[in-house]
Length: 449
Image 1 (cartoon, rainbow, N blue to C red):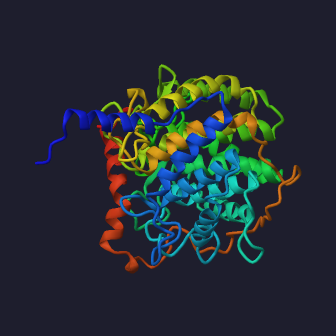
Image 2: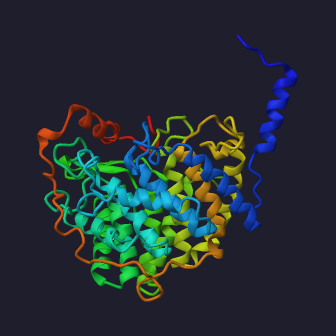
Image 3: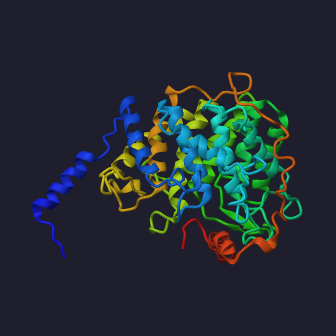
């Protein structure tokens, strides 16, 4: 066994200290530099631009939806920094995965795709439209139309046959989890509907947003104190809930509520709801530092869950552009979390790999796409007052839309031929479902068992 001398260990530690990210949250250049370092580390995991690989895909063990989340974060990275380093690879990925009907239902994913999976790509496209990310070539699908296509395919899946409505987690009947109606699928739908209402000023989108919000409260997935629970089983008519709470559920609804506040010209009802969401989200902070309360304390965060704080941080900041009173509430936790996240970025061979548990004050040994993305988003969030507000059709938006996009897609519950589904597909789609359904049946609270 090779040993490391005391002097060698000290030299290694010294190198890591030198390489560590030095973040000054009051300095724009420092924030951009830190984000650049972290983005570079994140993209080391991406193989979709390698010869023979599939643009837009992350390698195992990552799922397709997280790639959509990652490219959404790279759109944010450009928005906050102006750095075009990753623009081409982002555009390539976002367009390659649209599928034959331009609705983010690509054949390489549709057999196991859930509503939330599709929505993360749709929300990334919507961010591209709002932030004026460079438009695709004219002969390619456009950002706004892609987001509208995702919305339209999901509106067609709204299912009043059980629980008086709501979106199911899984799109197709043959996938495990089809009977699960969850907060993230309905939250993403609400989020897109509200933001599309702002961008297009089309009341139909706002009506759908109100419908989704009301349904969440009616079935108990949103508590009177604005806690958002994971999901519910429609075979029980949604009479019991899995009470696990995730950061990204609160963030998804916060952003949608801010959009509705903006669309309604500051309706006090939506202000009260936003303040309630922010108060309810206090469960996700320890001494103002963000953490995933359901899995970080017991060390059981899976690959997906390690990225959830990225979306929470993203939407905490972005919501303040649509509901300005939010800024004073969130900036303190954002700053504290950013500083803690930077302190976690001292790991790996490069000495700047980011960890999961920011509350530890140093790298915790965890690494991956989610860890990098989360640290990058919360650090970039400190620049929210330095960037332009999201555009709309009437305030400088240039992305071309199509209100009928996705209307002809054959993406209802029957979907592709069931005989095309393999055992491996079923296992992949059903793995997380099994965990959350155990939570429903077992009466879990907010901690992953």
